[in-house]
Image 1 (spheres, rainbow, N blue to C red):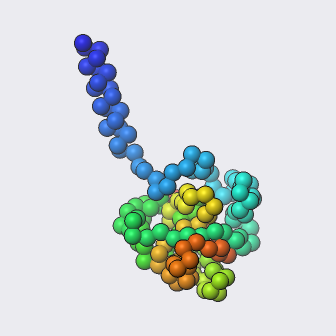
Image 2: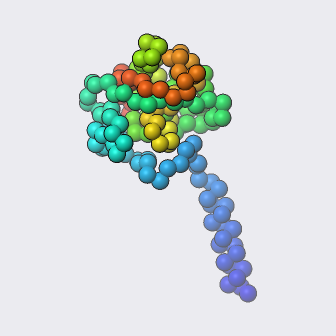
Image 3: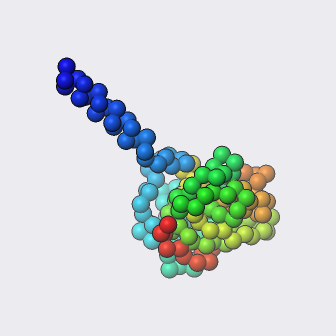
Length: 158
């Protein structure tokens, strides 16, 4: 009887412990969560070029945007997400990195700060805040190819 009670208490403790962990916006078992762009090869399995620290080239990435569902929530950098701000989420770029994003379809550009991780949806490389997507004219399309150039590398620290 005592061992059954101990087992029940252990299960309750473990359930309570898992409730304290953070939950990512998106989930993917195949997405590397602890590597920086410098540690990854220039091309991923889906042939998307990555921006490598130390290079000055422009990469063509598939971008989407996110907004109301995450507005006011903490980002991976610890900043509170402002859907009307000029920020972005990327899987591997160091947090704090400043990038110039150009949408060739409209010819418009915006400068944003990477302060979050994502998108973790197959085929997407960059998630812009709603404010940045509006400035580019990407909102109606939802998803589009953009040119990304590094302006200033971040430290990756919160």
